[in-house]
Length: 376
Image 1 (cartoon, rainbow, N blue to C red):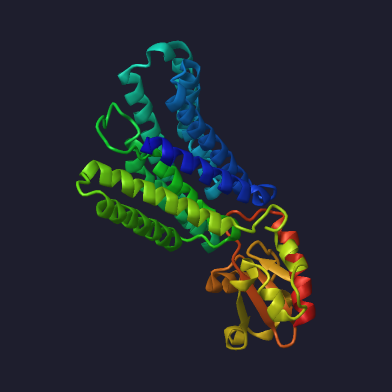
Image 2 (cartoon, rainbow, N blue to C red):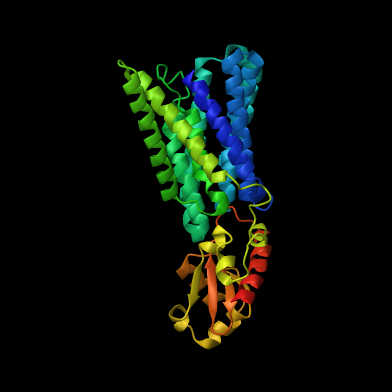
């Protein structure tokens, strides 16, 4: 019963996260891959609930197939986060595993053996380890904001390893709670802040601490209400409290963030004032920016700043004579873009757009830059 409840809660959390990622998915390959992973995971959880309720063989076969393709979906997301293709052998393993276990499900689904279940667990574990290894290996080549996005997702993946393994009854036959749905909640929490560029590993750990508190509170209430609460029941209560806390946290985080309101331009359009302070507070991307002027620019001779000031928006891909100064300033501010606030005196706003920012965001930043310079 508790496994079904946690699975239903995780499915609801995925639905909220899938909807919240919709706007970013239209402009970012990372967000699009994340949304696809949400969709496939949601299908798997829905099938699991249906199998719990009916025990239908066709649903069991469909569940096996969804589980077989989940590792490849995770690898495709990792490729986008790293902006690198996975090694050919890893991609072939992911594709081959998906095909192999799909064939097993379609042909031997009637007699899905314990050995096949263990093989599927081993395949998923190997693919997860390879995906984590790829993320850890490539993170050093990314910009700070992109690395922050990757690190948050990487931490979430690492935390899910022991939870996901508990889903396999052949390996752990007597557990009071299965951790697969809890692992899904950890992934959703780890990625829920990334859409508005506020995701950090520390933020994920803070979320988990809040949910651990909810789990402890639920267990305490159970102990008060039930005189002879055994260890298995306490674990079930803790898992239920964690799941409810995660869902409430996600609902609170996504409340009021509809598909039309997630963009930078939409946020600027709703800004009540035209002053610089009002514009900078309109969206988390601008609000978290760092103003660079005065002493921060004193080390740069006017001749090196003049080419930089010729651009309203600057990123690290600038190739002309302003490129070295731009990259130096961006690295110092841990930013991805510089927005010119004023020419005289020289002043820039350094902003950090994370890995879910796509190419279209550059146009939105250009609009914001015009408004910022006009208000300065």
